[in-house]
Image 1 (cartoon, one colour):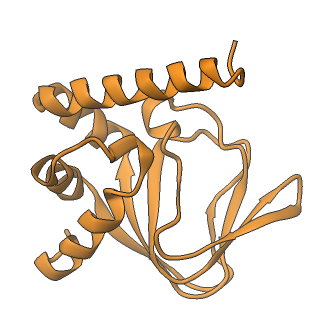
Image 2: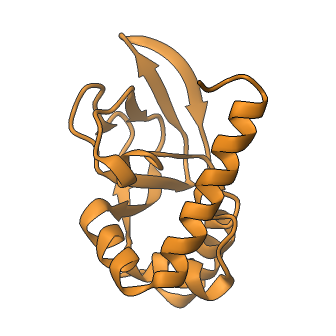
Image 3: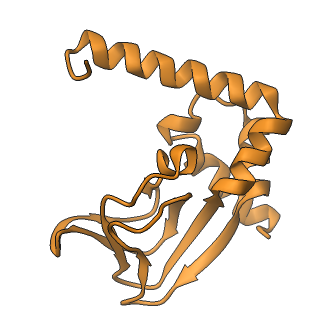
Length: 145
C-alpha cells in the first residue's frame, strides 16, 4: 500500500502520463489506490523483452536502463514510465528494463486496472476518449493507417 505523502507525489507524476492526463485528481487517486510501490536494487531486471506484459510502471526515484536486443536504448528516471499499453492489452514486452540504481516504482497490474475500469465508469470513458483523440491526431499526422 502507498502512504499519503507518497501518494501525493505519485498522483502528480501520474497526471503527466498521457494515458491518465484527462483524469481528475480523484480518478488518479483511485488508480494510485489500485497499485503499489515496489523497490528494485541496482542490477535487478524489472521487466524482460518478449515476456508477457501486463503491468504499468512509473519510476518514482532512481534510474533504469532500457535495452532492446541487448542494446541500450535509453535511460529512465523519476517521472518516466513504461507499460501503459501493456496494462490495456497484455501484449509482449518490447524491451528489457534493468535498475541502474536503487529504483522505487509505482506498479499498476492489469487485473487491478481492469477491475478499476469496471467499477469506475468515468475513468473508462475518459481513457477511451483520450485514446481516440490521440489516434485521430496520429492519423492526421500520417503516422497511423
